[in-house]
Length: 144
Image (tube, rainbow, N blue to C red):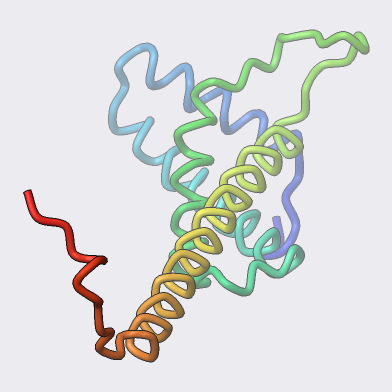
């Protein structure tokens, strides 16, 4: 297996062995398979980040998030599931969708926070320029 390509059958086999080892309590084998899956997901997440150009996200943080979310979601992958089309799922497609959706959510959150900071800064600037002392007439002041 090369560094920049994932074989779907190898990925599905590794996920199935990882799920079986986790279910049966073989922790040392599960740890080795988890490390192997992390390497696969690292390549996958890296290609997704570069391919979809998530520029406002920090590359290393997005890469780490992509690998972590794929490791969490691989436990839910069911290779024997048959969808509406009558086809079995592919692990490569499932993991790509999970990583991509998570990165899109991170991208939206990052942009939302950036926009909020920008609006707050503009509010502060406008408040400083508008904060000239105003004079009130006696009729504007109400006493209790």
